[in-house]
Amino acid sequence: MNYKEIAQETLNIEAQTLLQASQNMSDVFDDAVEMVLACKGKLVITGVGKSGLIGAKMAATFASTGTPSFFLHPTEALHGDLGMISENDVVIAISYSGESEELSSILPHIKRFKTPLIGMTRNRNSTLGKFSDLVIDVIVEKEACPLDIAPTSSTTLTLALGDALAVCLMRARNFQKSDFASFHPGGALGKMLFVKVSDLMKKDDLPIISKETKVKDAIVKISEGRLGTVFIADEDNKLIALVSDGDIRRALLKDDFSLEDNVIKYATQNPRTLDDEDILASEALVIIEEMKIQLLVVTDKNKKIKGVLHIHTLIEKGIS
Image 1 (tube, rainbow, N blue to C red):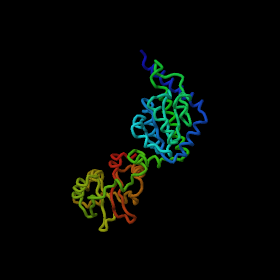
Image 2: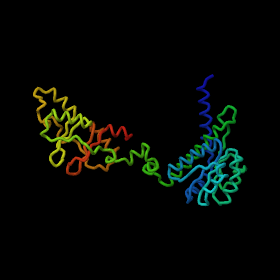
Image 3: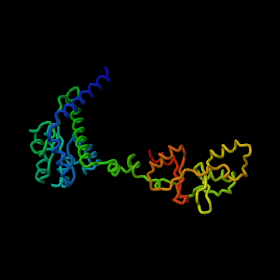
Image 4: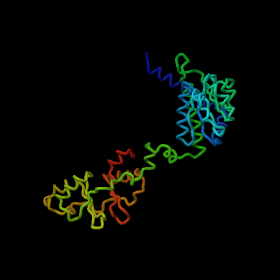
């Protein structure tokens, strides 16, 4: 048995279903978008079985892209959760056959609230179709299932139509990356757009020494600081230079090297600093990568040391 060919056939059937739906889409879809845009409450998604699973995903997509939404299971609705629906909401009910018993049971109650109802079904003359104010067609020629029974092409199409509706709403609302990040503060995009240098920089117990510090003492301070670097500052805590463990290793190769030397002799003068701790951490990472350095010393406008941002911290926190 050639499983690769079976997989390819499955994908081709579902792809063809999506292509046909795209070509046959009616103006009802426009009306559905406008109905949701006009909604002053929430978008409620409901359905049972596979349709319910698709509906739960749709509700999550809407909620994360600027359309307040939640999934309501019809059975739970019959036992008290109908109170979660108001006349200011819009309901999307999903049933491929349009005759799901649990879903059909709550439709009269939804209409009693005068809540706008969008049905997603293959049969406009079904119970769901008749109760709906608008019907988005979910019509497939063939399920990808070899028995033409298990919901495969139909659930793929339903999910894709939900995505299409969400994208239309995003475009209509001019939904931006920053808006998306607001709903995903813990995600990669949220970190990119909201985490600042001040949130991640090390501020306490910084390894700061004077320019008179001996090399041997600076080595001890490098070890204690756990940054691989010490910062040389004046009596006002203004940054003068920095010395890394790499600077020390390179100094060891010099004929006149001595542990009794003042460490300033081997320091990097005028190192790259950052005088704005409110910039995004992702922007600081770009600077670090472009300069091919390990860390940035964060100072105020007068070069007084405020903290340090290390590339390892950025990586650990998922900044990219």
